[in-house]
Image 1 (cartoon, rainbow, N blue to C red):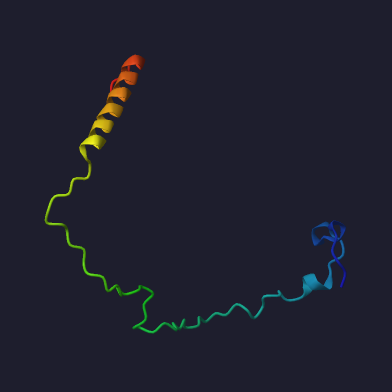
Image 2: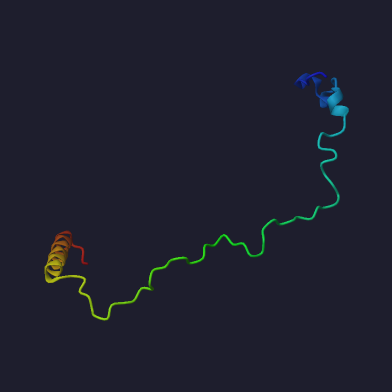
Length: 94
């Protein structure tokens, strides 16, 4: 077999290799009939894990819990005031 070069192109009237005249390589790979796809998964199988936890369900507390204490609120209020003062200096309102 000869390797084609641009000078051997069939379009330019040059030599055509024997390979170009043979049947396509993928001949026989393409079929007119379709094959049935078969699933190997079993109907009872699932990729979702069932809930296997043994912990008791979460129950909300019966009493109200304070998330912030007075010291936290005071600190937050101070930070808000500082932010407002800086905004006033720049002429922006919050």
